[in-house]
Amino acid sequence: MIEVIKRGPIAKSDEELSILDKIKECDGTTLDISGEPRKIINADDAEKLLKFLKEPGNKYTKICFSNTSFGHEAALVAQPILSSIKGQLSEVDLSDFVAGRNEEEALEVMNIFSLALEGSDLRYLNLSNNALGEKGINAFGALLKSQYNLEELYLINDGISEEAAMAISDLIPSTDKLRVLQFHNNMTGDEGAVAISKMVNYSPLLEDFRCSSTRVESEGGIALAKALGKCNHLKKLDLRDNMFGVEAGLALSKAVSAFNDLTEIFLSYLNFEDEGSIALANALKDSAPSLEVLDLAGNEITAKAAPALASCIASKQFLAKLNLSENELKDEGAIFIAKALEEGHDRLCEVDLSTNLIRRAGARRLAQAIVNKPGLKLLNIDANYISDEGIDEVKDVFKNFPNVLGSLEDNDPEGKDYDEEEEEEEVGGEDEDELESKLKGLEIKH
Image 1: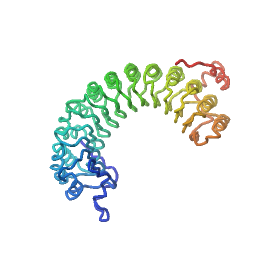
Image 2: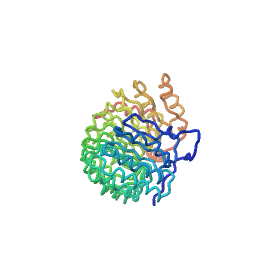
Image 3: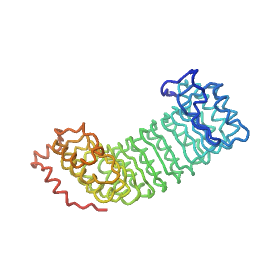
């Protein structure tokens, strides 16, 4: 069942505010009525807001009705107006346009808009934030079935279940021109991911793919990875916050080798562990020469994977943002990463190794390695186990750039790593300075 999401209070009446103040842009080619405040749109409001689209010979090609709440009567007013200009429209944004409506009315409104725009030749379509579900997708069926030249499709936060994903895959007749496909924050699951992968499989021009926070596990992750292997033009990939696991990570590493144009990759919280992360690092090392963003946070990565990660990072001289937070790199891994960042990397802006069980030696080496990068804005090493002496040393390194060093309020100088304690009991442990000295001369292969 659809649950139309209420995003804040809807102003039902405001005598001081003209409905025309909702218009953010009206320049003869774009009509954008997404301005604040959110407002219930009645029939009279619709007449006033859409009157510009009725002008003879108008040349409007882009419409945005987001941040509104169209009811049944308002939709009936919009229907003939949109039908009259659908042949000239190229971009339609109907995200968040039925806020607060009950399911029955929301579906009616979606169906009316869908029929009004059926047969349009769109390059951009945004249906995000409407809690569509399978019923909502089918309500937009007439519009979706008539789209052969879509270049950008956004279905973010839409309650896209397995069934809804299958419906999308079945309804859209062609994706061979698709460049952007985004499904963030849905409940797609494995079967839904398999359906999406079929779309990806027939989207050879895809440049930007986002399927983050979609409850996809190993089977769906593997299916997506295999399909992405055919997307040789991919520039941005975001698969964050799913339950892929090691096998999906290995499958994705095979696809990554084809991504020579990749500039941003977000693979945090995917449970890749060392095995999957090493495979991905090795694959990325030999591809994506212009990579600017690398995010592998929260993947249970230990120092075992650090040499492979360091080798990959050393080869990415355009890197601007590196996020390896919430892993288990410890000092040894941190020193490897520091070594990789020492030479070049003049575009580096942000480095995040927070929550990594790092102590004094690792923190000091990271600070020394990147403090003089000309564009550096943030080093985040909070929530580690850095001693008070280590904190003082890091602050001294950044004494000329105090605003670059992130907060250290969650650092725990007394923090204990139980695995490390066991090692110390067995072999006597290793002094932090000894560890740094031992690793100082290491060479990063790249």
